[in-house]
Length: 80
Image (cartoon, rainbow, N blue to C red; front, top):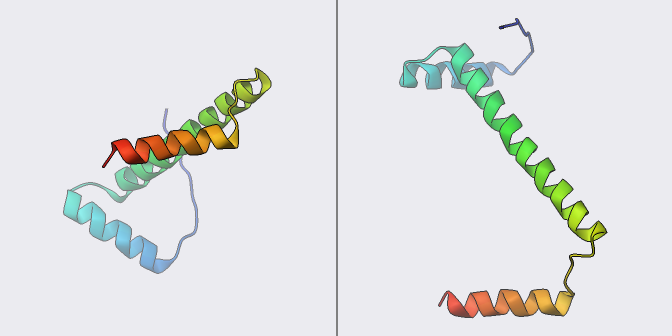
């Protein structure tokens, strides 16, 4: 189900949207919907990762700062 949503934006943003829509042969509406969907997906993923981290801390699944530094250093050395 589609609903109508209205918002204000800068004129330059509308111009950018129109240029992108034209270059992709898509509607301005399609561009906006894709951008919103991508933005929401990113934030949904971030929130899930934060929640997992909080669960790990509560369950005692943590490491010391020294251990973290050692892991980072070993990965840096193995990447060379």
